[in-house]
Every structure is written in structure tokens, then in C-alpha cells.
Length: 178
Image 1 (cartoon, one colour):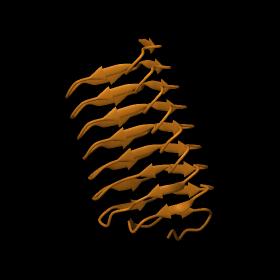
Image 2 (cartoon, rainbow, N blue to C red):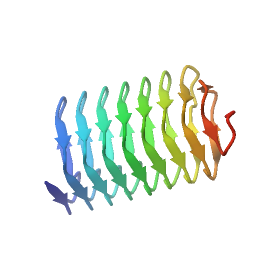
Image 3 (cartoon, helix red, strand yellow):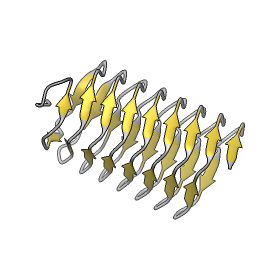
């Protein structure tokens, strides 16, 4: 389905809903908004005025292309699972998640702020994060960690915050990350 040119949110789905295989483009608000424990998969979400995808607690966001939105590419609540997305050229942060998130297998590049930012108890694993205007990743809370990521050529630097490097990251060509 194509969802375009709405004044507000492109698709708004309640708790437990699945939003799958849509093109969501040039809406006046958020591209896709899903509630608590919702699923967003295999969507092309581009050129919306605000966030590309906004998701509630325990959401699963997987396999989406999230491009050129007016704020954050993907923004989620506690316990989200965000995997295998291409998130690029968004005005704000590429992926932003609160506590307990698992963020893996994403390609996050050329966003206007930080590539990936997380809260307490989150894991950033196996992502390619490059050429963002801010830091590659921001891990401002103890108890969060990152491993097996490639973090390169981000204007703000590779890693910000006290989060724990769990090993096997490649940061601007160096095996040891801050």
C-alpha cells in the first residue's frame, strides 16, 4: 500500500498491530506510529515531516528502509528490538531507543545527529554506523554495551558516554573503541 501526502501521521497502528510492506512517503507528521508490542517490517518510510517510525514499548522494527525524514529515523520505547534496517539521511538521530533495547544488524549512515542512541540496559550489536554528523553511537547510561559494530567516519567521533565496549568493534580503523 502507498500512504502519501497526509497532513498528519501516515499510518497510526494500535498496540500489537503489524505494519508490513508499505511505502509511507511525504506525510505531514510521523511516517509510521505503532503502539505497544507492535511490529513494523519491510516498509519504505521516506520524506515524512517528523520521525520515520515511532514505536511503543516492546515493539519489533525490522527490515525497513527509513530515509530522509524530518527528525529521527526510528524512535522507540523500552524493550524494543530494532534489526536489519537501512536508516539514512534523516535530519535527526538515525535510531533512538530508551531502556532495554536490542539494536542489531542495521546500516545507519549520513544522519543529521548521532547514528544510534540508547538508554540503560541496551545492547548495540553488529551494526554498520558511518558518516553521521554526531557520534556514531551514544551510550549515556552505565549498564548498556556495544559489540561487533563497524563505526567509521562520524563527525562527532565514534562513541559517546560510559557504555561498555563488549569487544570486536572496529572504530575508525582501530580494533579498540573508547
